[in-house]
Length: 276
Image (cartoon, rainbow, N blue to C red):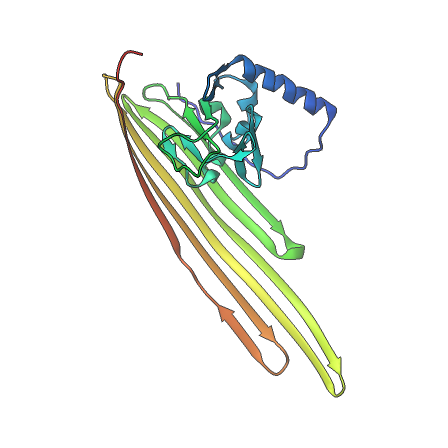
């Protein structure tokens, strides 16, 4: 069955209430009944749960036991999570989680400590997200857009993002895309007076930036249970800051452009060792 999930994001201010607190406790109880614990951490099945409905993956993780989010970063038992994976691919940009609908998460595995294959200085554990596999010939995804403008402070941004997961026989195609622009403007005036001195100084600073990110992943599942997959990420950031100063007799301006490009490739191969 084919279906498409479409969501529009809007900024909102939510005041904590007693009713909301009761609802969160009920949701955590639902998660607890679907959780399998072990010495290393736990695994939670989120398929069909209420906490995953109507939320992006980045918000769903905050409802899981022992996981918190501070300043955009996730913590496990108070320590910063060392790595976060989606279908075996390590995320270098957590904003990808904004495009994944919570309903499309199958399960989440949380490990309290970093594994032996990771840097010894990383001790905050890992979060491994497994997405629902679409039916053969089916797909799911999401599209979202946002626009903010604050005229009083000259700030504005807009962006569009989308995610799709498609399956054809044993081949799965995953694409996660974001494109956006930000504008910041600041104007200031200063007057200096003294003996035989009167100077009026104005300064204007502007900054325009463009962001683009796209991750494409292909995974082939074989009849033997083995999986071969590859992922390619390209991220582009183009800031353009400029400033102009005028003190009545002298005008100066500064402008610069940057072009920052990140490319990342991942190759995965999974082979079951036994029926277990």
